[in-house]
Length: 214
Ligand code: URA
Image (tube, rainbow, N blue to C red; front, side, top):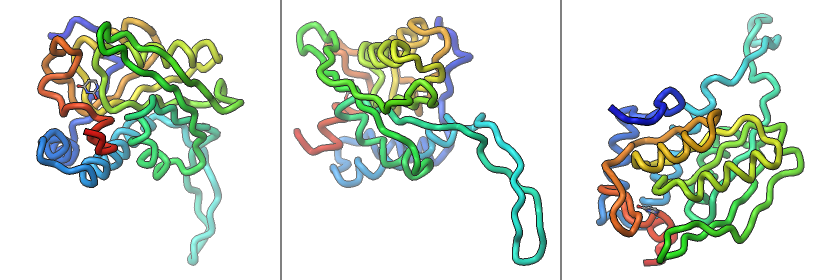
């Protein structure tokens, strides 16, 4: 039994997600396929993360008759990738919401202390009126994600949903304890962090695997 509040955590564990995640984890999976899988998994996660979007009626004329259908009612979305690995998830979410705006948070982890440092932050001007989907494939210590949540709260954002592909209990607890409203979507909560703050079993360095930099 986890010791964090699980009600704001959704593990997206559809069989297709689990299948694709296994290929993603495999060290023999190459850059091109890794990138494609990150995009596909972001689509599955985005689908779940927007499941509660409100609908309104709309009149539509089919080739046969008029009918009442549904459309999403007034939800505006911003995608907030945490640089650089988060960029790998943006196209997947844009496939679902082509009108979404994209803001960026640039963070790097000090290799010694593992503490995140911000070097860039730019949000769309009306970010406070948008549902913000913060994307980062790996939730390790939670330092980057909690910093991104802090910047968004300071900008007045009310609806924040975090989407990660692989998490660990330490990171999940850090994020959910940090902000009492935020919701978290992930494909897996792995075992633990190692001494270098990498997730076990994990998939290695997501940024390096997306961009082929190692
Ligand atoms: N970032 C990664 O890319 N991988 C991890 O395991 C942890 C943080």
